[in-house]
Image (cartoon, rainbow, N blue to C red; front, side, top):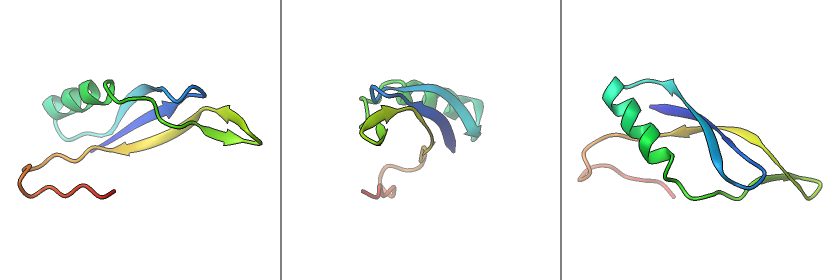
Length: 70
């Protein structure tokens, strides 16, 4: 599943919307958890922080077999 969001100039994520749905229950859980994410490092242009739109993949699966890439 995919979420669309905006990383603001202060690094906070906002404007979450489901871009690719899995199910209404999974969508609700992904939105709930995404709202808990800490601030990110904002994008900059010529040293000035600016908002940027992102797509955030949200993997759902068996925790024993799920691999998260860093």
